[in-house]
Image (tube, rainbow, N blue to C red):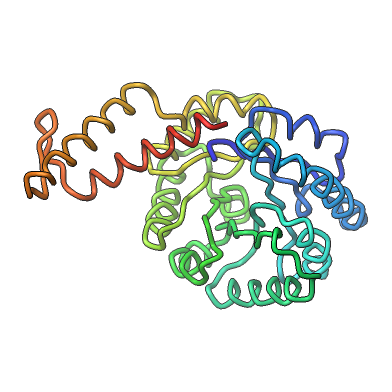
Length: 295
């Protein structure tokens, strides 16, 4: 998921354009991009669109973006209504905001599963995985516990705006951004889930977007959220595997396989000692190449 394109739930006129575009995922937003008076309208529009496209997904799954719905926070009155609208159409991921502890995450999952249990039986309906936002200081402290609290958590998403703005932390200082990204990357790695970078608010600033995306990519993030279609190719350029990295991953995997055939646990590739951690990374690179080629 190199790119995740946000679409406000109150803009159904943009749904098809986003869905047909090059983004790896489309995130339909029911939270911050929707005024309180229009929440019901937004959830109805998103559910109707996803319901319409469910059968189409089965026809061309490789070219269909991941469907993500960002619901309102569990402590709001809209959370249950959001679940009631989107769970029957089963998006790939539910983006869960404002969860700052493992206990809060598990409580939210229990409410999700209670609503799923009440739905009519449908063997084809998938249970959406969770993409959990890390966007408060407490959530940042508890990120590893949140990520590992339930098997439905597939990834963590960093929300720098929510994290920095209330505290007056300057986002244009690279050291601030890097410090937080590293914490989220390590927390995701500890729990065995992916890390996705959040949105960059100024969609006219390509240089700023690329700089932040590059930092995230170097720290192991798989992709970045986009608030405008023009940011999608920028994200793909940063997070796609280039030919040099792909060739290096192939050399590592082939050398490791040859070493195993000789009963060895390590090998040397161009002067580098390769053992299990390096092999795992190379295998992840090649798996990403396969995923990207299928889109």
